[in-house]
Image (tube, rainbow, N blue to C red; front, side, top):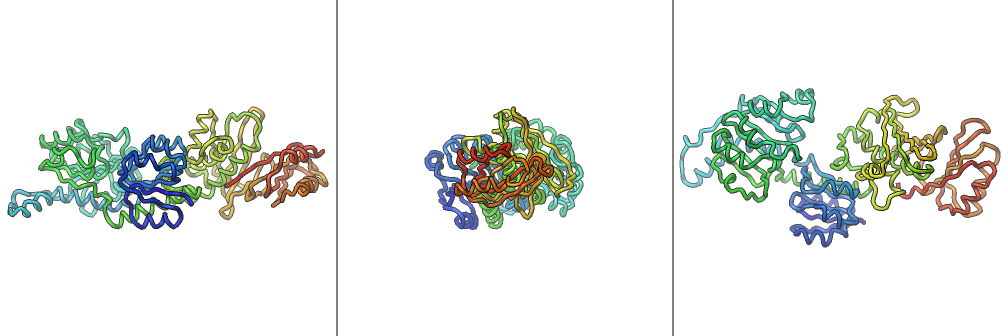
Length: 528
């Protein structure tokens, strides 16, 4: 069983799920040196935001296959190092969506009605109703920065308060924004029009300090800001200056650049409502993210494509359902190409026909490249680092899409070009099994279920199949299946034989010496 380290507190339901399928150690609160000392023993690692998965950790983690983040943000994980090492990074982007959206609404209402300040005043024995005059959110303009899952949920809830909704997100279409009742604006226009601004963007180089001193100057005077996403999205000093000048009427913060926050001036400011990173702190959210992250980790360790792999192309659930059966097809096509091709690799052309051609096929491309690279690469090769390894080798990669597929609903074909020529393989998925259906011009149907496959390019004549079978029998090599494709009667043919046993080089030479054999190749597929 694989070993998994849970380095941060997660819901018990997630730990129980992991323990049902793996050996699990729960060691929370470790300092960096403690983690470095033990990480080499584990195939899987589960964290939240506390543990930093640095380049040093990745370099020390020789067995590590997957890092699971019980939550959405992965800025505490060195994605570049993980990708280069072939380590999948998966997260749980949906489990805490509602919790974060509800907390955003709670902070907006608390800010608009001065709830925390009035609460503290009354607890202190005061009765100062006039000191806590608030504003209604009804008919106010809410600017939503980031229209992903949480931002969209916030927009849905804000509609029930009869708020006007404007949004900023350069990665969504106007049609999508219109469907959820949001008018798309530039960030500058949003800041100038909004009475309330809420941030829901990921932390990237482009979004760090997206609200700084220049942005504060653009605000409608007295606007209120809510941040339940990432502390680094705002320049804290610019926010303090905006509050002091009156340009900002109030700020509600659940996240900070440093946690616990070191900027006491911001936390203690009389116009600031703060909570200690509670956006995902509901019983329901903690249970959901723990289960979601654990499921993703186990999928990777089983060799299955995990939908929420953040260092590979994201795939929507409905698209994942279409593409997932073709991941193993792509892998076996790539593996077979490596075994069948002669000469120096120059480039590969991957073609998609039928339904799969209508979608983003980068995950299938990664599968083909992973299969292609695996037999010729030292170290771990998988869907994550295969494109990186292919680029490092200077392999030219071309993709073609054609939504028409006369023979099958969907089909993948790949042509590897080498210094000695080219060879093409095509495959499809039938009954959730990969099938090889074409080798160059030969149509056939092969289910690659055996560890070894013999490809015999021969002349179609009586006794061809029997001669090869007799050689295998003499050497106690068990044949699982045999499939033949030919171009014409008594013409060139391709014989594909599934074998349960390895074929020594002397046996390969014996088969090659048969008079009617043009070429023979052995593919060792291993685990698919």
